[in-house]
Image (cartoon, rainbow, N blue to C red; front, side, top):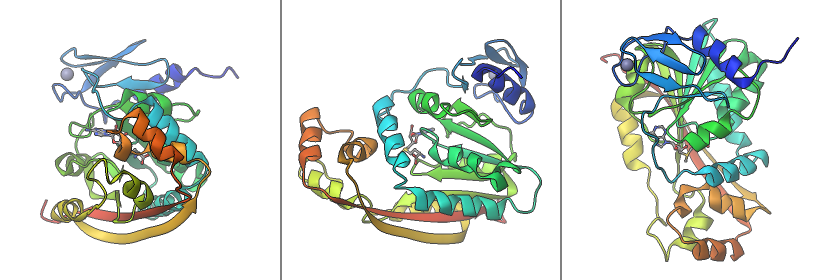
Amino acid sequence: MKKLKKIEVLRILLNDNIEILRCPVCKNTIKTINENSLVCENNHCFNISKKGYINLLKNNAKTIYDKSLFESRSKIYDEKIYENLSREIIDIVGKYSGNKDINYVLDTGCGEGYYLNQLYLEEKINKKCKLFGIDISREGISFATRHENDILWSVSDLSNLPFKNSKFDIILDILSPSNYREFTRVLNKDGVVIKVVPEEHYLKEIRSEIKENIKKYTYSNKDIINAFKDNLDIAYDKRITYKTTTSNLEDFIKMTPLTSSLSKEQINELIKSNIKTITIDLRVIVGKIKESI
Ligand SMILES: C[S@@+](CC[C@H](N)C(=O)[O-])C[C@H]1O[C@@H](n2cnc3c(N)ncnc32)[C@H](O)[C@@H]1O
Ligand SMILES: [Zn+2]
């Protein structure tokens, strides 16, 4: 059978999911999916990319997350350094998608798509989950489409999600910003948010080397966790801490937004530094919609 092009797979995915999408500009229903665009009832028009994603942002956002950051992230992920976290996420998604035949899973701020692509490879998840990834960075989403699968990728802002109310069962929010108004709007009443936040020692070796340059050495996630608790009821909470050795310090340094304000010279200095081990210290929290909301 003839292999479908990425844009053809995307058109099928958009048609299959047209009823859950909404226009990010006027919030109305999507009316048609054309050859190269998607059009809402008020004729707002969005481009479908040949690479296999839909751009739902009217103006592309300029962010610190550029192509090289996502390439470095992907190389570090290929070294399986974040596999413990990925396994944890797969287990949690497996647990919360147990009772329904089809679950809608949305990764907000998915970047280069590692966690969704890992979920897709798990047969038990794949069978009963429809996977959606959004990110404000076109470079991230464009890179996320590199594998062949039926994940629906879109360039979108997580503070203005292009989905109708109460459509999702699970939201992933991994080291990305949150918008609980939007998260609780698109989640159904039994839905959950799986959020991953850095803990105090996360990448502490890199932080300590750059502490002279920027004031990011000490880190507290207190405000982030408090905002989570204010909006959701915590159903699960786990800290994952381990040390890893790497021969690829350069990509570790380039994959983190911690170093984004450094000059090329400062980055090169860091790469030459004597860092041998790196601490991964993350917290995974699952929150349910509060009864009163
Ligand atoms: C530290 S990266 C994490 C990416 C990915 N979740 C991972 O763990 O590899 C943060 C991500 O949040 C995205 N982001 C930041 N603000 C956003 C917004 N308003 N809407 C959607 N994505 C956003 C960035 O583009 C970036 O890809
Ligand atoms: Zn519209």
